[in-house]
Length: 161
Image (cartoon, rainbow, N blue to C red; front, side, top):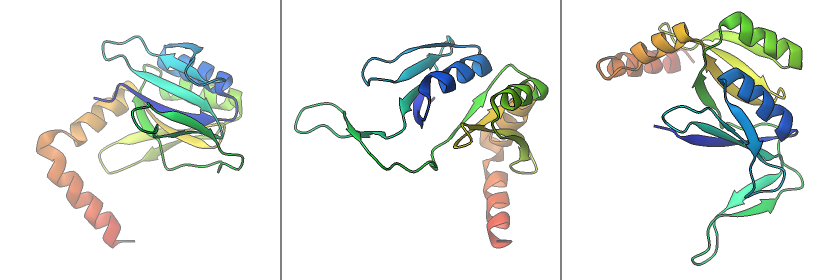
């Protein structure tokens, strides 16, 4: 179970507000790191997303000290880090929010078994959103009894290059 994850944003407050709208959560200042926000969904798992200012990077503390932050003056706009989130909204509602923000959103088939909506926060960070129907199909596709099928499909896709 993933309880929270973090991403970087050029405008953490705006990104947090949109994520709160998409997930039905609430956005708050996140005090450990100045300029950061956190979105708490309010579910039984404590699901949250921490949004840090672009350029703030986390590094191990020294000795017995906890995590510390560093400033990167030249961060990349892109990252491989992403997450898939189930939301209560339908596809039209998600695409409407993306359109309002001027951000890319595209419904994509990830395997023959399920779809996701690529929602590009600030047109830089991808969050895969799953409507209730998409989440149902996703969970069915990755159920323990279906993992071997998923592995076979991945191998076939890789061999097709």
